[in-house]
Image 1: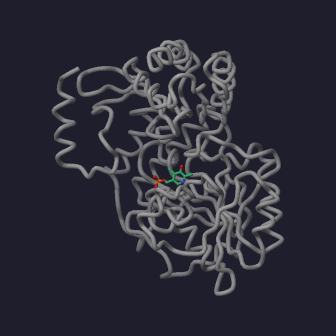
Image 2 (image 1 turned 180 degrees about the vertical axis):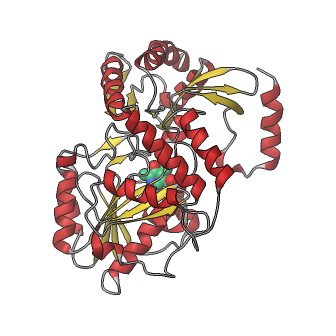
Image 3 (image 1 turned 135 degrees about the vertical axis):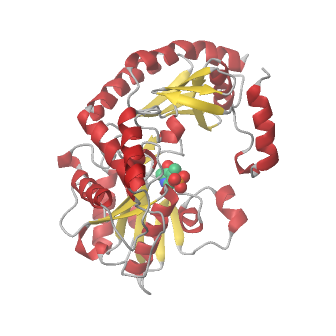
Amino acid sequence: MSGHGEGLLSRYTDSLLGVFGTPQKVLVRGSGVTVWDADGREYLDLLAGIAVNALGHAHPGLTRAVAEQLNTLGHISNFFTSPTQIGLAEKLLELAHAPSGSKAFFTNSGTEANEAAFKLARRHGGGSRPRIIALEHGFHGRTMGALAMTHKPSYREPFEPLPGGVEWVPAGDAEALSAAVDETVAAVIIEPVQGEAGVRGHPAGYLEQAREITRAAGALLIFDEVQTGVGRTGTWFASAPAQSAAVIPDAMTLAKGLGGGFPIGAMLTFGEHTSSLLNPGQHGTTFGGNPAATAAALATLEVIESQNLLAHVREVSAYARERLEELDFVTEVRAHGLLIGLEIAAGAASAPAPAMVAAALEAGFIINATGPTTLRLAPPLIITTEQIQRFIDALPEIHRRSTS
Ligand SMILES: *Cc1c(COP(=O)(O)O)cnc(C)c1O
């Protein structure tokens, strides 16, 4: 289909660095769970900017808070602070059941939050703990420190040498973790649910075991909740399925959903010891934690709370899981709240998932593939069962078109 969008896409190719390939569409507008492209076509957004637009698009509570903050005081540098920055730090520590002495550090992205965690680990390691343990298939970001902890060789190898000392153990394998962690390890970093790996959780008890193993060896436990945090899995954090069941790490990183679409990330450090590892002058950021971004995050948390969205996420998730499991071409549904991985039967096509992403777009749905047979759904937390049903109803035809 030719139109306004094609001209813009050719200008994109001429002017933007090619790291993302060619974008699927030029999007111009959004409202709730719906977005529109430059040719006026409408899409149901089941990806939400990769688990970012928690409140959907153009949520009035969020846009009002950001507009008011920008009209009042938008940026100030970290030589100063603001009420929204302090309020957000307090709120996140409260939601994370952080013990006294816990602190927050704000960034602009997930990778920066993990850079901060990497520096925290190095400080904890001193000279005697040079090793950092990460999980196979884990993803932690694209900047050099976060990249050094990311498993996928094709992401890392073109940029070596990277910061050293990182090793990977099989995900969800407590014995392998236990064998790897000793007094030479500074930190273990774990995604409670591995998002980029295709939405893969760990066996029950694994996070608790990781907590015990790291505590016994004196290593930090870092949870990367950049994708899973802030309500995405139907609780505030995937590592805290209930307050009583919360596994308290030494540090937690957040970003994606935190600002509801406004760029902001955070590292939370738990307890006095961890919070005193980074001292004045040892880390910093110009934009991180500015009034506009922290107002966006506060507004996002406020809407999640006042609209009771955590319960809503659990309800829509349970409904979607049941309906998706009924489809004969879906061999596995991994639903962690509204972060859902779907395994698609390979059949005649060896890579059905990317073909289904393209067919879904044609049919008016934005979804994502994390691998040749794996689809990922991460819709806005406000999506209704009717909206997700609309997608599930269309899925058999999307599958048929993409495999014939
Ligand atoms: C997306 C992601 C990151 C990186 O976040 P950016 O904001 O893209 O830098 C890090 N960790 C996890 C688990 C993620 O899903």
